[in-house]
Image 1: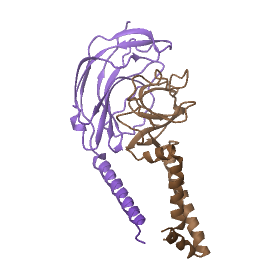
Image 2 (image 1 turned 135 degrees about the vertical axis):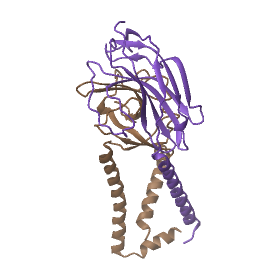
Image 3 (image 1 turned 90 degrees about the vertical axis):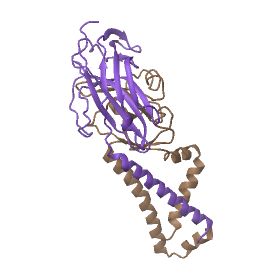
Image 4 (image 1 turned 180 degrees about the horizontal axis):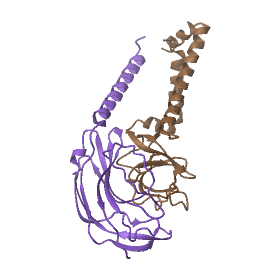
Length: 189
Length: 180
């Protein structure tokens, strides 16, 4: 039964399985690569606080700050890395929103942030082929830093943390938490 | 060629024909069991989803496949990619978490944004009217794995229903009539 159709079918099935196993090998070859790095982050002394309305919601604390970020993430790019999504996130506890138990599901090398207010302040996409060197000096935040209430004033457990989400060509999508910077907030608006 | 296939059937006796039908049922039920098994393992009601919009470009394009988990013990983190449903929208949304506020009693308020969108989903009217946050009950899963292009088959089948019938019908005919 060597018809043209059965040959076509065989060729199609074979190329499909070759593609599938190559993709799987590609995933496997980078599945256990360390995707950590240690960027530097710091905030300029002046954090300005005020109360403001966020999109028609109640009056909330709004903070304005400028930060420095230095990182060389070139080592995170391998043949199975499509892009990096780099974030600067503020973590803090407030009276309303407190620490809860966190089950560590990621490897221990990636410390999970504990306080349960997380606000992304800045992000950037670094695509494959782009320069993976970040050198930000006194950069403004990309998003408004609104609290979910009036919990920013005098907050002593504020931490900024750099993280990145590795987007592969095929494979896992890890979110890796990195350098922290502790930043007690001012006591006045 | 078609005659060749049917001659296979005509040469079967009754017992072999029943066996063939049972084989077909076996394939269908194992596919279902694999799906249900994945649901149990991942805790997500839909462990594999197809990206249907370009709002997460350049990370995900239309037709890419995402593997989800939804472990309740594992809290949602800012920066993760969330798949959630919105009231009165048929298709689930795949967007990145940019805010998490969790209170002592475990109630979580989440704000999301598409990488390719200028504003967050509240400002972008992605949520239902008067909805300010995504809550736990709306979460379908968190993206943990990624496979490009493969979901294009489902998109094509949805766009051209005829293709679906031809493909699935052809597969069924092949399995039922093909003799091992």
